[in-house]
Image (cartoon, rainbow, N blue to C red; front, side, top):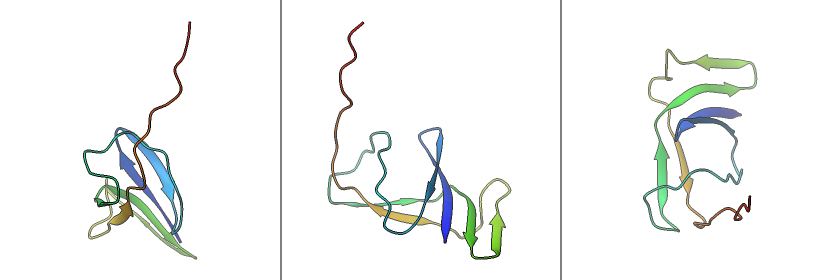
Length: 74
C-alpha cells in the first residue's frame, strides 16, 4: 500500500515505514504531523485517485529531526 501526498509544492510517494527528507515543517522534532493533501491511494489492485484529493484520506508521520542541506560554493 502506498499514497502520493503533496507538501511544500512537491509530491511524494510514501509507504508505511518510509523515511523522507522534505521541506521544513513548523513542528517540533518528535511531533506528529498530518498530511491531508493525499492525491492517490493504492492498496493492491484498489486504486483511489482524487479530484484533486482523495476524500477522507490522510497520512500521519513523525518528525524525526530538522536539518540543513550542505552548503553550495560557487
